[in-house]
Length: 487
Ligand code: NAP
Ligand code: MG
Image 1 (cartoon, rainbow, N blue to C red):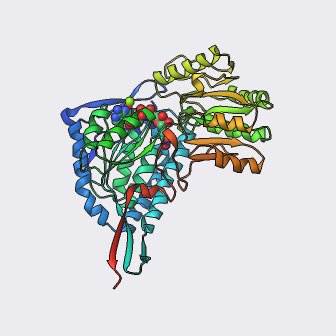
Image 2: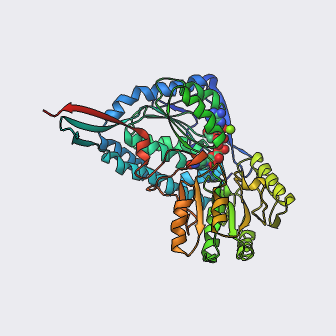
Image 3: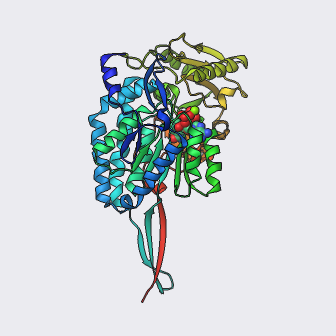
């Protein structure tokens, strides 16, 4: 570790953040956080027990009434202050994400910008929560429709976007007047802890946001989900875990938002601008080392341009620089852990065994660190696991289609529906695809769709609800209807 890195880590709070205080976990338990590029332990942090998690909920419950009664302008100002602080501390936040998660520093800076924008966006939305007033059709009553904060929320977030997955939930919740308990991923908790410190600096009252870190995700979240004081669960992570949490939430008819897995198709039509398609593909596939829910998972290319697309993309992929994300010019950092490397390896082997051609890469890189070579496989056959499962690594898999109907059928042939990408110069086709693709989001001739002003989320087993945009705050509001006599 460099001096700079050691100094930054010394500034990260290592306790649980409960009721405005940094406290130790029950029994003083700690867990190690590692750098996936080296395998080295960066720092030890508190490892919460179920009792600690309940204390975090106690604090959120205690703060709920006064936070809901806080003037929207004040809530807005605090969020705006947090946005300014995130910008001011952008270098620290970026380096911290690179250290704990592995993404290249330039991408970590991009995430600071993206993640920070949710704070600005929802600071603007906090003062625009409105309702309706009107006479009923019979003329006998006056109808008032208002919006109330849902109440205390539990957030469970994944490791792949340590800052943005936290701000995308925290900002709308605070704007709406809800208090929060957040449990970041065990592998990447440091960014959330550092961000909590910035929230304090921005003037957030004690108990409004509480953070617990733990190696026992299920044992700690279970008691919170069954606690009648909790009013909302928002989860981002795998569909498998999301399904389990949904089942728990069902017992209490708990309100939920679920941002789950994807299996994004990336369609390249015969009339596409291939240069733009290749640019879009590099972003849609290799951003975040391929570890994004929005990562293009299946490249479906018209058979007349498939060889040319494969040739051009392979030339680009073979040039990608692999290494620790802190090094200059690195584009591909490590995968998050050994399991992720093993999975990439298995998916490539299975595709090749079923008849695909390996065009570049294809193997794990010797340690230390959990690296996998940037890879292209073409001619992937139906039935290959790589077309059904989330790859979550730097592996680009190409299959072909013969016409638009087949392209749409293949694209929709999945339980997921988070995002799709399509490249075509035919405007009418573009409009048909908007209608026909079963997807929550569509990048039409672009390789990245994320924006704080846009509703992010999926259909089918990719989730329930939206984050960001005009829609995002409504996940944290419930509608109340009041009737009073007209005279
Ligand atoms: P994950 O294993 O589902 O974990 C997500 C979070 O859930 C972590 O905080 C994890 O804690 C916790 N968790 C795991 N098992 C749990 C259980 N039984 N009960 C309660 N909590 C539990 O997912 P991941 O590997 O971190 O993230 C990758 C997945 O997230 C991919 O499928 C990706 O597509 C999806 N994702 C979706 C979006 C979206 O917006 N749709 C965005 C980003 C990622 P621990 O860390 O302690 O295991
Ligand atoms: Mg886990």
